[in-house]
Image (cartoon, rainbow, N blue to C red; front, side):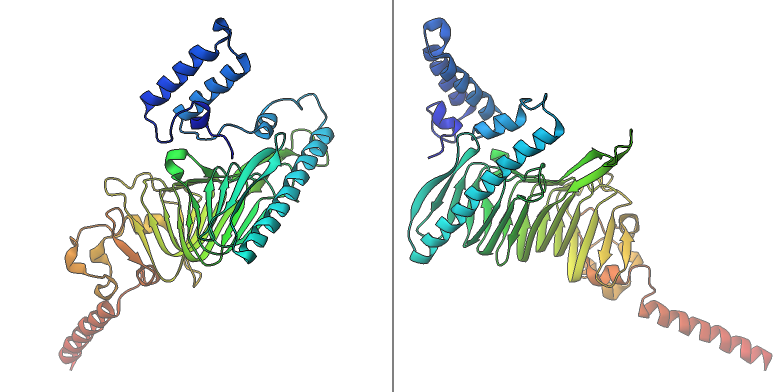
Length: 390
């Protein structure tokens, strides 16, 4: 079993801040070097306390410590790449073994628990439960894992920035992919990882992609190129529920429920529900035919950029400026559902108002009713002029 920070402080999960602090003080007095204690254990206890203060349930693995340190700082770029490729290759091998182990348990409908990885690479615990769910505890950092059932995750999902070959790719052929209390535990998906759920939902916390600059491969001084590692979450038959979606991310699902969308994010869905107050200028919202778009922010839409775009399946693209400034009364009656429930001066954005695909498709078009009245009025004018001339 992977030891978490609560275990290290010898306290129960969901302890209060006071109980966490008291647990730390009790063990600190026991292990502090001034009292003849174990210095290494004291450092471990202190780190667990610092982690829990920011909501981090699991300590860094040895591999994460290695990755975050500067141990390779004096090496050449070639040496760094070679060493990291070896690490990625070993992690990918472990995940392949884990996939085969989980599939065998699924076939026999058995339960078991096993650690994969190593102290150097970082360990994760996999447990196949009686209901068919696969529990993963620890950080998933590289390689592929396909599973025919739901996955319950306690840890972060990342992908190696140092190789394309061993990118993280988690694929569920059925069932949901869920983090355990993702907001409370601050779990995240980042750095170009891909999660595909064929027939289920994805319930996660923050989602991050990555952009970074690399020097010109031809060696030209001062010339850099931007590379992207786009994190992708796909649930074509289900929902994606997330917190903040930031920096080069792609989401595709039947329904997407999120807080904020920032920095080069693209979302594609039939129902897109946004509860935060921030959508940046470079966000693209692809609305599928027959779908709806809702912004639930009800006190201000200033953080929602005018230049973000909504793209329809028919190719039409609309700047959010056109939606933010539009009044319900400006829309044709047949395109406004339950129009009596809204003030005629309400905008169609910022109060949880449902914006339908049909409304956006017909935005800035004259309604058939308006056109009909236009023809009648002009016909009357023509007739009165005709009679005078006659």
